[in-house]
Length: 244
Ligand code: 6PG
Image (cartoon, rainbow, N blue to C red; front, side, top):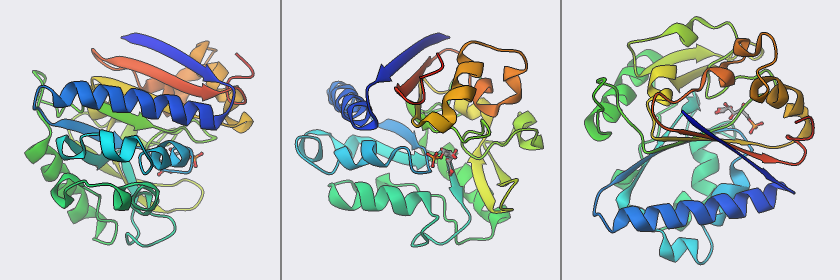
């Protein structure tokens, strides 16, 4: 596993740099004619990053027809609910760019969780290429990290952290009880490139504990993200990195 840590003076500079990297990466990939499979993170941290895609030059220059967007997790709510990760991404950029509808593979939070987890798992299996280990292999997965060190909807101490077979699982937020659907660790770790996007000083302590491998750091689900063969990146603003 190759680990890269990038620290930015503020969240806007982080968003600008990551969007530019995304544009360059997708333009190179488009030359091969191959599709590119992305899983987006939820929460609020990626909003500024996503909003870059809705403006020039990104709106025009990113080859949207080559990209398939999935989500790393979703809250089990309708797509127009304020809690919906899809809603945030749709408002930030999806509804502003020329991406074919068939390339947007949202988790249907309005469906019953059990059947939706199976449906979404099949959608991933039907589209995302499988690697030698038999797992779907995303080209790029974006992740956030909660104040308790969770990532996607894999929460500390949850049995879902030990799932080895399924592509996605049903989870429950430990504080709110909200039902979620999340990719599993094996699928996340099978990605070619994984980028954490973490901002704000409330995350700084856990960022340090994970990146400096302090005692019991592996209790944090985010610390269990270790790509089998890919690249792991932490994109941090100065606030989140202040204790490093
Ligand atoms: C979700 C996310 C979750 C998020 C973290 C950080 O659905 O909530 O996928 O893993 O990335 O909770 O959230 P913030 O970016 O809002 O701090």
